[in-house]
View 1 (cartoon, rainbow, N blue to C red):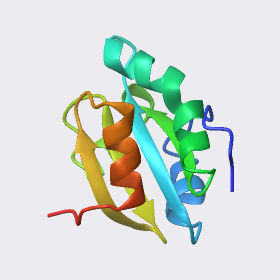
View 2: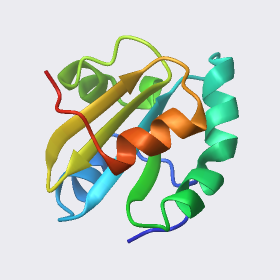
View 3: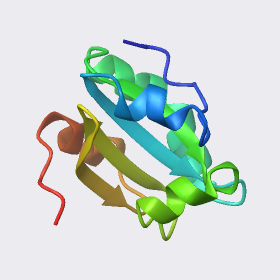
Length: 112
């Protein structure tokens, strides 16, 4: 697993970094003009430490991944999507406190 949450992925690397691993991966969808995205991106190392590096955390810029954004219906940024063994298991849309994201990653609510 990657305990360095600064990795930026795109459509080409999304399958290998998010869908293929057997463990959980938290994806933060971001946009350049999204102020909360910048704040959350800077806080990802603290989130990884808080989760004891139990899951991978990556960033996916929406402008570099339009098909992925469409596939997972990412309508605004920031959006967090939690994948486990290739399946989407939880989502959080909009600005959220780091505590809320940590809690969601620890005990994901089902995606409806």
